[in-house]
Image: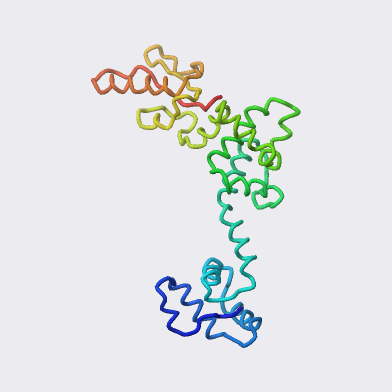
Length: 252
């Protein structure tokens, strides 16, 4: 590692952060005529992995010359997608009932490339769409795998299909719902439901006394919202409660 600053005044550059200045001072104090020895000394005193971003910045700005720059840059580019990769793979595991490893390069290489072009939400919609389309086919459900779904030659086709049909979107929407099965729907928590999605609910008629075993009904979110809001309006007028709408689960 070589330090390229010509005088100490450069350390006062306003573009430098305090951490970057501290790294430069550390490198200056450990400087040796042999760049390899300088790097060895720096590694002995500083955990370079913790300051990878700052060292990349210093190299690109011409303050230091670091042979490890390209590898560090590549590593940093890969690591910035790690939280999104974990989110997508965990979504797949929950939906497909599988155990894909989000740390595996073989599993996630194609996904990382897709994340460079497309947001996480859209990718999860494609994941859910493939599940909705293939889950009932003994042949096709074997292809519910990251390497297949995120393959460049196939992904664009899957993306177009989910944009056109919106099939499977309910699975993505369901992930955002915090209402638990058996919980009563109210004017406050009902806003989590999507108008166009279908939900399974049990409707208890308080006056008829059918609280023991009412049949579940599948209702659109928009319809459920109207029912709950209408009852709330009656309660606000002083009327008695007639129904309990109990959330079961989301259905396609």
